[in-house]
Length: 236
Image (cartoon, rainbow, N blue to C red; front, top):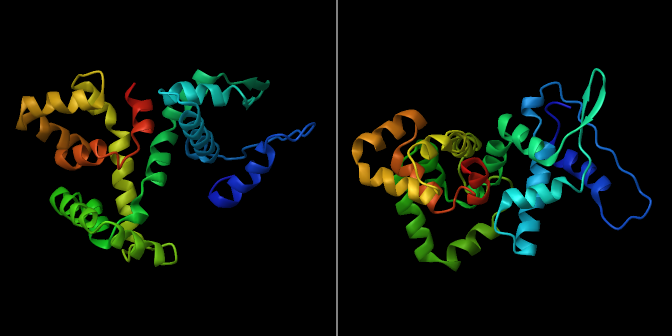
């Protein structure tokens, strides 16, 4: 269903996915009228794949996601009946409907940032963002304890609008990561090295195409603030 509460939906789906219940059958049916926005199930599959990858020492998230998808029968309901979706097809569809981008935006640790960091991220100001994060790292556990003691959804003292804009910045970068791939290299690191070597013209071109300063894109990607496992799904 559209515009449903994410937490409540995941809780209901989780009931059907609880392991070690012999004889139990669970069916999850999406009634979303806009399949391009139907990412709640995708988010759960991706989270499971990340945990599976970590716990089993798998290097490639795409392979971990394939393994997870194979444990669940996924069908697409069509006029002539239900058609089973295979693992690679499911991943292609998730990428096509930009589910990966929205998941990347949702899981980015924006809530752990200070208000200054959030505003710098929302505004694409890489110098302020980098300086604020460096200052926070220098304070170490003191800052972490302060964040932990705060309550409510808005832990950073930044406004909800600023938090939303910061997450939208992350999603924008994820949606356009193929632009980085276009410039060459087999990894994201190699691509940035090539663009650094080519100079200001290419960097300006990236800024124009992303709508985000090149330095900000590079900072967020290489610092792993944007989840690299998920970005690599799109980059591969």
